[in-house]
Amino acid sequence: MDLISQSTYKITKMDCPSEEQMIRMKLEGVEEIKGLNFDIPNRKLDVIHIGDRTLFEHLIQELNLDTQFVESSQINEFKEEKENSKERKMLWWVLAINFTFFILEMLFGWLSKSLGLVADSLDMLADSLVYGLSLMAVGKEVARKKKVAKLSGYFQIVLALFGLIEVIRRFVNVDETPIFQNMIIISVLALIANYISLLLIQKSKSKDAHMQASMIFTSNDIVINIGVIIAGTLVYLTSSKYPDLIIGGVIFLIVLRGALRILKLSK
Image 1 (cartoon, rainbow, N blue to C red):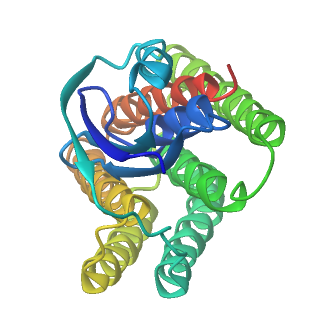
Image 2: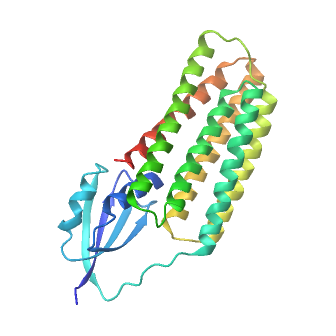
Image 3: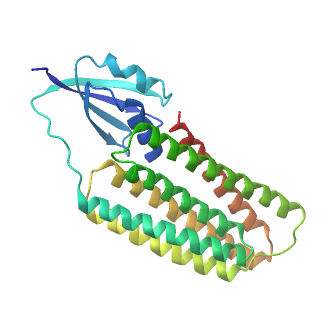
């Protein structure tokens, strides 16, 4: 009987679900690997495997995520990790909240002439796509996962570039000031929704990688919501379009960065 080992890696650039999916896809099909345990907050990966770690280690290094081997040890037994239906249900609730507020913020963003709200809606969509990819691709073949990742990535890039172009256009040609009331009200609602999502995830007390990653993403969303609220307040105080355009540009860049990460999944 082959000995089962656990090799631990420190992956400096693994800070969200997109890197986790990159690694899963890269290592999928390696027969020696029996399990992967991701610790995204601490940026660590445990690989449960038989045989020598050099059989798969070079595949992780090829992703250029600044991977360092930490240690390897033998384990007595390995139980195949079963899917936790409660955690999946919890994550679907978070996905539903993200997608609902994508629609809501997109709608009120255009009606209010606020690129801050539009950009925040795309950030919500970006999160939904990453979470959806990690859940819906379970059990699917590698080619299917890569196709979904590529389509999601290109879709987000197009939206982000369109948003950045619109930011530049409004900086130069448009004198309209966004409706600050809608900016603040919708962002406060989104903030409350994200806070509820965060409480739900924390309540689960789960160590599952997807749940930990969701906690990180939701915390980031709360910071972005606060940024849009501040921008709306500054629009009110200054009667200027610039606070909205600045926060919108920053968020579009965040969405673009996330899209480029997702595209790596398709390679």
